[in-house]
Image 1 (tube, helix red, strand yellow):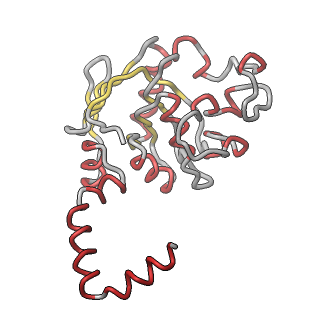
Image 2: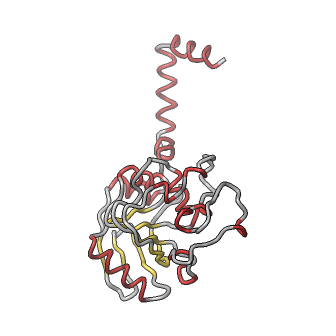
Image 3: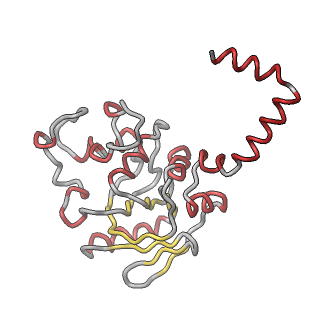
Length: 219
């Protein structure tokens, strides 16, 4: 998993509350577990005017001109600005995969659905909770200033606007540690690989019959 320390990026607004995971990545695209290639389908139902399906040619799609992320000024956005309860609905991990593959590294909202929030950390994304009035302010500035970019420092837990205004944010110490070091569950487990190996060797000596049963089951 990619580590997250600092990030500065253009803000892309999705000005709707209760964006669920089916809006983030519709169900017809959930046919792979490779974690990549989903960015082209992010927000498909509101990003396009026509119905999409897997491998539909891009030149046959009809982008929705009213969807902000389709506008030239928001191309290359890597900070997603959203409203309340972002990521609600089903628990599909494809949702953070799609946002990451699209190019987002930070998602800012007043609140997130719990499972989506947890899945973001597992995939190297920073879901950043800020008060609703601060989010309102960021939306207004994003709309009024083309190329509006935010600077996020995870170590100091600080967000800085182009004018130099600073906002602090809270994050669990364990999640912060994992992001700063690029650790998901597998990475955390591998940090104890030597201890796990030693334990298995000791267990095999004390209770060899357990491992015999396991080995027979694998044959």
